[in-house]
View 1 (cartoon, chains in turn red, orange):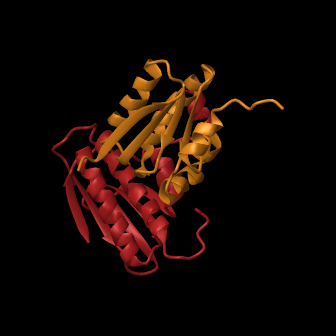
View 2: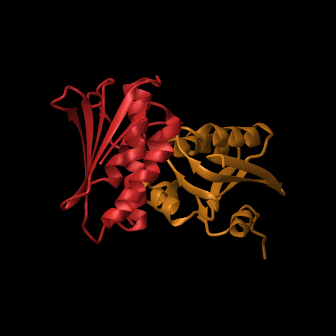
View 3: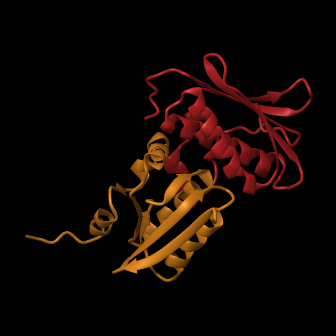
Length: 141
Length: 119
């Protein structure tokens, strides 16, 4: 299943809801589906705000593969690569002390998904691959 | 139906902020404005009633994260109540439930701001 949408924040809710519905249809419980939807929401936000620098008019592709042991989600874009930015370990106390408003998106993606990897596709587009295994007994609450 | 509406009302010296809808990068400005307005008016006791909040993304969490220390340095706080399972789960996974007090009901949230009376 594929979704293409413009690089504008007003489409994020659509992506969120579609991901949640697909995850539930795949067999994930509601809370798990919401976690997956939030991870995709954050990944798409990162592409819009950082890869495309907030510029509208660009395209974002999301591919969903619900077959097999996992729900695999790949986001493709032609903006700046996001894998070269070093991301420090998540420290909420430090972020609060520094009055930082950002720095949570990638952490949320990593907490909610079993795998998050950035790279380059064979087409030359940049991509973010996220995987959530369909196993019971998640320790994410 | 708007994506997010934010109602603010005063209950004693507590400002109750009730977002309805979802908070993400697109809607966060409404939430941020409501919080900023309350603080600009000198209200430092904030209770976010999440009964109408479907989900909150990092943009919304960042607003809380970026404000809470300053509010606490002025003797106030930001507390939350009536979060649904989705939002509660987000808080727990990220550890926000250790950063902010989360109460079950608005009543409990308001009571949490009352000084403890001596015996």
